[in-house]
Image 1 (tube, rainbow, N blue to C red):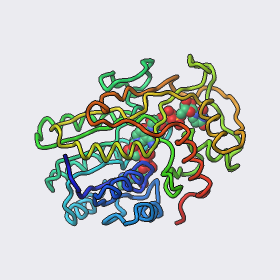
Image 2: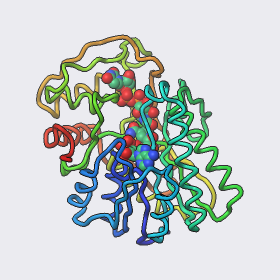
Image 3: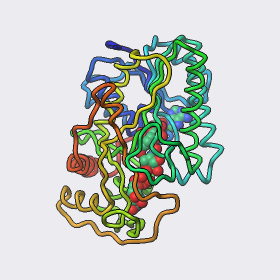
Length: 342
Ligand code: NAD
Ligand code: WQD
């Protein structure tokens, strides 16, 4: 069990990274952030300090691919572990810019592994994704189910898992936990931290939040002819605070076992798009306009985690339900309609 530690959080100004940074600070860890702010802003770091009541030990504006900058970060601190969130994550963009995705997501991970090796840091928690399961009809999904990534983003995550597995084979002192998140949503209950998408959101939850506050007209529901109870897509939405707690517990369990382990991070429960619209309308106290349109290319009917392995391994289970997810997302939207101040 890893005690109070100094943890490098790459992508710590992003959605999941910022919530995890607060969770780590709240539990006595020191946090150092590296982020190039390509999909976030320094305002997030200020909010982390405000919510946690103390700042991260340091926050560096740096691109993981900048070897000199990364070396300097490792030279300046003695890290016990690394939590690696920094990556590009938009599926549609990855189809347009596959090389950039391989470069940043895979190249960023190998750059980090190199710096870790040079500085004898041997513990890593890696952000993987349910998207690696690809076009599947199996419900729920276990970690042993085959990976069949269907877009460059998902392939980068699968490649990173393969690289990490392989490196662990040859570097026996390395411990890696790869967490395959399903659909993280929601916000910190303070309303001070949340998801700040760039431009028009791709994902359903931030889109709904912007429809509810009138910034967007209506939600387009991508298809109502799936083989699901109401015909709309079903996903395993998981509260970002539960995900953040999962990372803190992962750090505490990195020393349980050397080598690479993989866990699904989800609730095990599915919610359809229409159920989500209804829950959000309830939280916002206003009907949310929507229209049914055609299916979005690449979408699957249903993705639900079997998260029993992580529950068995460390006792991690979710404690926040769908009502908490939409209430917290709505509170954050109302308190920060234009995101964080710059
Ligand atoms: P996010 O975009 O909010 O956070 C990623 C952070 O990394 C951003 O702050 C961004 O500025 C930073 N970053 C990107 N490229 C960088 C680089 N080259 N150098 C330094 N910093 C860089 O995304 P998120 O939703 O918080 O996701 C975090 C991780 O979890 C990502 O690896 C993502 O692929 C993975 N993931 C996310 C979801 C989801 O639905 N949000 C689901 C599964 C997996
Ligand atoms: C959810 C549901 C849509 C938008 C994505 C990534 C995945 C992972 C999690 C990173 C689907 C429907 C959506 C809209 C809609 N991220 N929808 N109208 O696609 O399940 O997963 O985030 O690893 O890799 O692909 O999330 O929020 O985009 O969609 O009807 O405007 O909402 O069809 O059924 P998705 P999402």
